Amino acid sequence: MKSLKSIAVALCAALVLAGCNVSNTGKGAMIGAGGGAGLGAIIGAIAGNTAVGAVIGGAVGAGAGALIGKKMDKAKKEAEAVQNAQVEAVTDANGLEAVKVTFDSGILFASGKSNLSSTAMTSLFQFANVLKSNADCDVAVQGYTDNAGWKNCNAAQSQQKNLELSQERAQSVTTYLLSQGVSSTQIRSTQGFGESNPVADNSTAAGKAQNRRVEVYMYASQKMIQEAQQQAQ
Image (cartoon, rainbow, N blue to C red; front, side):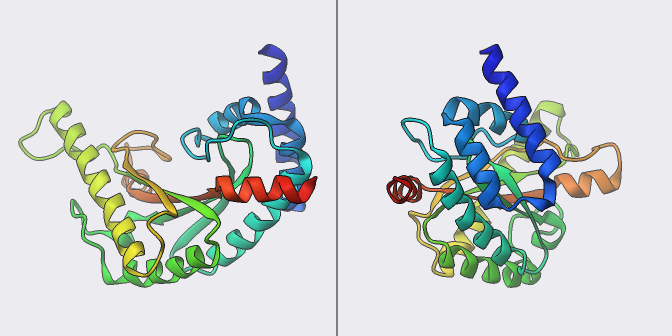
């Protein structure tokens, strides 16, 4: 296990050093060469995305990884054109390239609410077209809140209400995407995480605003992985 972690650290370092000079296609080949769900889980843990990834039975080779990376390059480029979307390349639990799209809750919802704003609908309408254009990507929708307490609630009660609110917000995003023609089989999970996994300091107003968000992950489906493996043979 120690040697596997060493490989993962070295691979992650290589990806960091490569930075913007290496496309998802190239990074996919590097990750694929590193091999397998075990290594992918370590990399996924570093990236914070261990829950995102298709269930596969074994390693994905460099050739298949490169083909998947090329598809993710396309998906990322299309997502970058969506209004109010923050887009970045991440690694899923299989060590494969994925795309993370973050929508700031400030443009999605009013404070304490889960109904979508008109601005949010415009952005999500554009994003729905991206998902339909990349129908072989699986999708996970994840909602988060800051750690602000609720009136007349203790800390535990506030945490529970924030968890419920994050789930409702994630579901609102999913429901709207489905209403715009995204397939229900493409959206594999819709989950709220409440106050967990903050991306900024909750002690500041700016940090709280960043933590109130919905993240949408586009990652390789089993079908995409199988087709890539067949083409790479």
